[in-house]
Amino acid sequence: MDLASLSTPTKEHAAASGRPLVQIRGVSKQFANGTLAVRDVNLGLGTGEFVSLLGPSGCGKSTLLRMIAGLGSPSSGVIDWPTTGHDAGGRPERDLGFVFQDPTLMPWATALANVMMPLTLKGIRKGEAQDRAARMLALVGLKGFESSYPRELSGGMKMRVSIARGLVLKPKILLMDEPFAALDEITRHRLNDDLLELWWQEKFTAVFVTHSVFESVYLSKRIVVMAARPGRVMADLDVDAPYPRDELFRTSPEYAHLCRVVSGKLKEAIGS
Image (cartoon, rainbow, N blue to C red; front, side, top):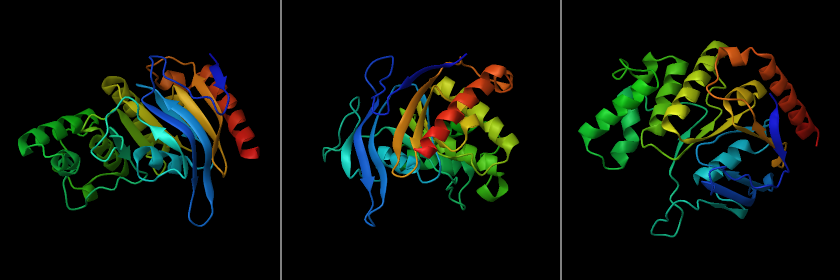
């Protein structure tokens, strides 16, 4: 088992199934204080892919993720959603969910109410919103915790609520900004497994920011390795390992080999 391909840093990696869901072309981001956070990023995000953005702190992973989400604008270049429509102002309609580093739950609301929030904002009637939110909580393993408040949930359970909220509108793409970084290793492994199962069932495109080589190899179809500031793509790796993945894969020689290869690419990126 090996990494099937390594593209050049500027190659736009399209989905095998055809037109990319999101196309990032020549994107750079310079902040008002003069910091160049991201420089000349070119990527294609394909339908149904699981893509990890891997790199050291300060390499622009979260900045890039926020620009994809429309939470910030590129200083140059474009982020195109060619398979979607446009709103009345001519802006692309980004069909996405976002999971932040912290669960960002409303502390006064139950788990069910937190997951219902995007549905309520969409004007979906209360009964239907409750049913859909309850189904999504069940999918993330929280059946029976619908009436629990965030203060009554563990860190891993709160993150499950956050993922359920991000997916309740069935977006085409789920953006995740180091959602498991603050969790203990056992909980993190369990959530990695559950996230893969959910991705496999729901067939959304996943873009996952992480510092962990081990996590990126376990989860991903592709790993985009980014260099330190200014953030830029140094390697685009296809992970040639079949799904579903489980503990046997995590403890296999093949997995260890893949981690060594990706670690080497990350080391090159950090030293560039």
